[in-house]
Image 1 (cartoon, one colour):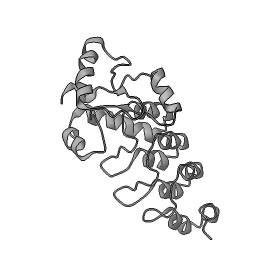
Image 2 (cartoon, helix red, strand yellow):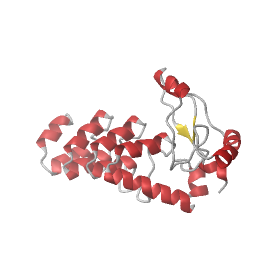
Image 3 (spheres, helix red, strand yellow):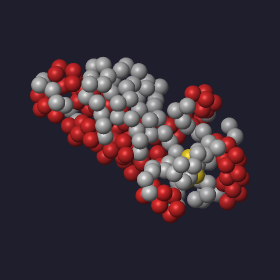
Image 4 (cartoon, one colour):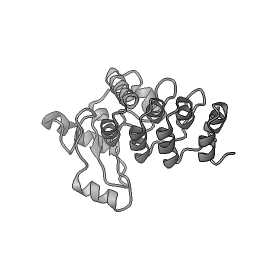
Length: 206
C-alpha cells in the first residue's frame, strides 16, 4: 500500500480531495510527523479554524483520506486485506460496540466512513444500537451515517434496538431519520411480535 493512502487531512466544504493532493501531503507526514496538514487515523487533529468556519456556513466538512477505508468498491478491493486497515477497522467496530461516542466520532471526523460495515454487513450504527449506546448512535448519525442501512440478514439498527429493548436508542434512531417500516423484519413487525404497544404508538401504528 502506498503511503498516501493512510494520510488524512481536513478539506474545506465543497473541496474534493484527489490523489495529487495526497501525494503532496504524504512526504510532509513522513518528514514532520502528524500535523494539521497531514496526520494519521490514530493521531488526529481538530478541524482548523478556516474549515470550522466553512461548517458554520452551511456544510459538513469531513477529514479526507486518499482511500484508506471507503464504501467504494475500488478502495475495498485494494485495501481489504491490508493488515493495518483491518486492525484499524476492528478497533473502530469495538468502539461502536462499547459505546465510546467521542472517540468514535473523532475517527469518523478523521476519515473513517460513518457507514463502515463488517463482514456481516453490520454498520457502526447497527453495532452501537444493538449494544444499547444511544450517544454513539447519535454521534454517527450527526456525521452522516445511514440510520436505515440493513445488514446482510435484512435487519436494520432500529429493528435491532426494538428487539433488544433499547428504548433510548430507538428514540435516537427515530430522531436521526430511521424508518420503522424498513428491513425484514422491520421495527414495526418486531414491536408487534414483542407486543410493544408503546413503540407501535411511537411508530404511528395501531
